[in-house]
Length: 274
Image (spheres, rainbow, N blue to C red):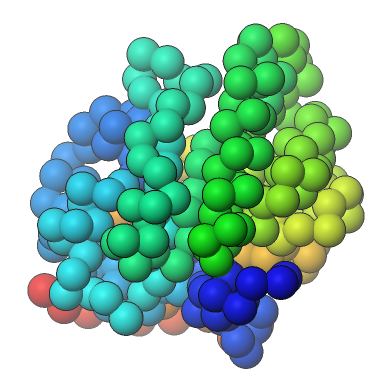
């Protein structure tokens, strides 16, 4: 890895027993609009942290105003770009690596959409921030999705496009790539095998049935994935603390889906610590 600071920060992000990452993202307001469950962001962050995630992804303003009391309890991944409800396939810069260092971030993350007209610019941005972060001793996490306008609609779920996305991240020096799940462990194993880097999955939109998410997480780990970075299924849950603890049971403790469902049902009726 080369730079000691980067290795130290990676070791803070990645669980040292399982070698996996359980991260939660609360950066969706700028990207997708205002959600009722993200409006009380200070309380929501507290509920998520109480579950014990390895890290939380957020933008600089929320980090500066709401994350101080949680410093040292969970890693901070600072989001350096965002898309918007009006430009859903274009990630624009919103901060620099220097600011991530100032805020004490453990990693910096940037979004990137491949397969579209803006791919050249977005890959250029990703390569630049990867180099800047490495120079500053920061790991880089990229949120890379193959949903550009040049990919036919009937091909957007093809594992080869997902594999291209994660390999592009590795080629540019990205340490951890977050991408979409391909729908089954066999095809996702091909995605993981296409890159020397770590691959984690986004929650996506498979509904509100938590059992389906438990199965997906289990399959991702079995297929060689490095973990998850989930958003809505966590902060939109009636008890974010409970669902984070349930995901930990699979990712860090080798729990089965049935064991995790039982654990979740036990936890869900316990009030979240405010």
